[in-house]
Image 1 (cartoon, helix red, strand yellow):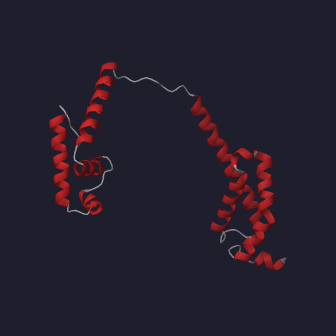
Image 2 (tube, rainbow, N blue to C red):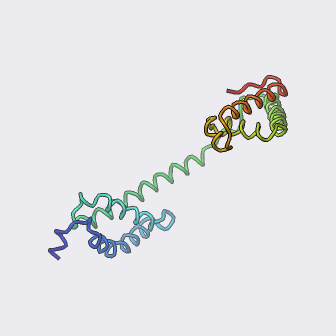
Image 3 (cartoon, one colour):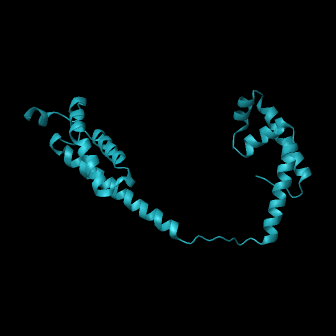
Amino acid sequence: MKKEINKTICDELVFKRIYDKYSKNLCDFLYYKYGAQFNPKDKAQDAFIKLWDNCKKISYSKAKSFLFTTANNMMLNEVKHQKVVLKHQQLNHKHYTNESPEFILEKEQFLERYNHVLSNLKEEYRVAFLLNKVEGKKHSEIAEILGVTSKVIEYRIYSAFKILKTELEGFKIK
């Protein structure tokens, strides 16, 4: 037993012995104290990971205390988090906007027209435009994906813009 005290926890065999010795007890402790809803096995595993990460700082004799304290604190943090989630769910969320019904209707109609015009674009224009404006890809990235030059991509995006501006009154996008 004296030899084990002087060994470092960072040694895999020593760590395995600690794991084999305390893992079931730690899981049982967390299960009986907090129940199954907070995943006691996961928290026990996380505690062992923290022990491994800090193995140079913790002596063999302090390993059990470290594991149980760490796992208990993780469970307490999880309980606090669940209380915050529950409290947030119980709040009455505002289900209204300051937008007028006319504005909402115009927005929906505009979106329908926009989608219709977008769907009627040539496929290469639409793909380049969507990759650039929706996914935020740069011209060079799109060119690489589609196997064309950046100039071709610039032209396709410009052409898509031109068609959208022509077909949609007041179309502006940044």
